[in-house]
Length: 102
Image (cartoon, rainbow, N blue to C red; front, side):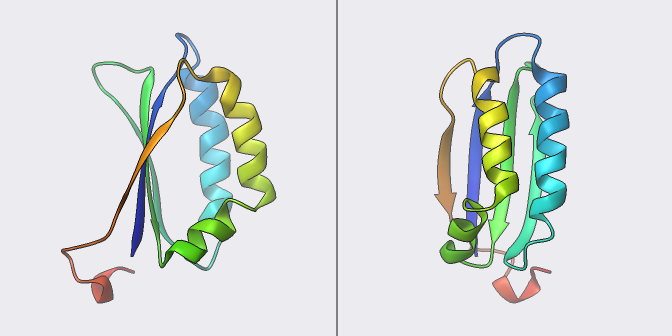
């Protein structure tokens, strides 16, 4: 699995707008054949901080996702809401075994 964890810090007061546009992007992303999971998480003690937890079958599926119209629309709309540039970390799955992922 190719797992991407994206850390997002928003400008104050932009959380609801960001969550709404992210939900739409995630709905479309989950239709992609190479996507196993895509979660949007909001930090409890700082609601202006979000994490995206994205699981793809492989790195090529992640690359395909970044070429979709819904990703480009989300990226254009999200960028002005950011307090600082996004950061990300790429992981591979150790446990559970890849065969147990849906």
